[in-house]
Length: 515
Image (cartoon, rainbow, N blue to C red; front, side, top):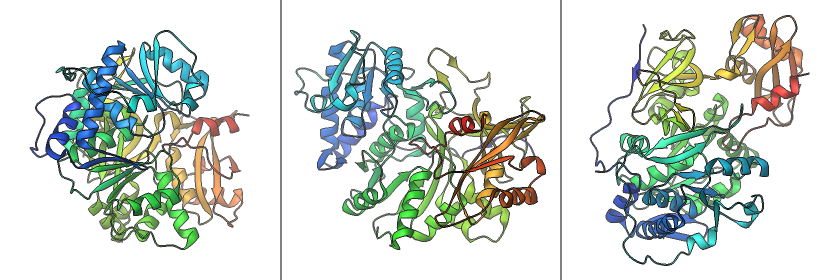
């Protein structure tokens, strides 16, 4: 069998009449203006107050003459206000990674100027002053005076740029991904029902503002009219306390965050004690099968969803839903149970797998993941569109589809290890290593080899109190896979390097084996 997997067509929902993301906030404020929209510590905004703040900010942006609005800050009330204010003002929203070094930040600022940048003193001191950069303190941004005159009117151009996001740069220099209003609106109306949340529903948002998951959380929560609880920084105890205090019904986590929560609960022998929690979504990185299995045991009444997406696709393109999780966890069929490690089936898009020559592959055949749909931008500033003639975007992720259309990821194309002309996926070796009871985490990368060009190397993190030597792990891989997959070198580490959204920094690990 060969071909393309399509999502079921979205239901005909209460669709906005315009294709500007500011319409999402307009609809929420008009339908549920007095409902609490946002909670950050002791601060609370209703949807009406959130729109008023965004309109004030939009007027300030237009008066500045800036061509874009940048945010250099942790999550705060300024996050959703800036997202919608930029849309009302008709300029792109550009959140910046506050974890970057001063030289890296100033390089990005140079690429977006002239701009109006919202920040706080901790990050302001990292920036080199320049005439084409207006800097607004977060406190000043949140305390702008009432509007003097008519509110700004958003542009009606669906092709206008709504968001410019710099990619994480885990393998190279960040690229500026472009998301247009029509891309984001297609994603939201295709996956979320307007006003679907009950008044008491709330979601905790822990992903940083500069990640597509953080932006999509703001847009989708506003369209559902769900209360957003923003946490500036993630820590398991603080997350659990916020969940209890705000009686949170929904949450989104990257795999490393969920892993830390599971470890915290196991370490303290405590039950989660989150009676209001109904749904927990995760994504942004590979989820170890053992972690999700343990999480489902700790949260037995919670609906789990794995959401796979990319910046260039306006967020989620495949979903492993609650029923999929339960069916896989309860099944004795290994082909069904392994779906817990998949990212699910297409959501409002088409997905297909191709080989290096562009041929569409069948079930269980690994290759490059391609995606097509109206939410897919596939566009970078200066580089232009990366869509092919038929609208397909190469995600640069490798993976395969099973016979039922479930997508399994093998890692990034750049991560492939080429040993003597043979392409080796790190993911299949990592899965075997993680099956050992002593292994808590691992990552496989390419290392230079005089005979084969590249060989497999592995960085291993052991569970507390556990022990295993390299030879035993090499024998485990040899017994499950071919000898070419056996790590030639293994190092044991206290922790692997991850970025804040849960992606392992393989380039850092490769450097360790470069010699």
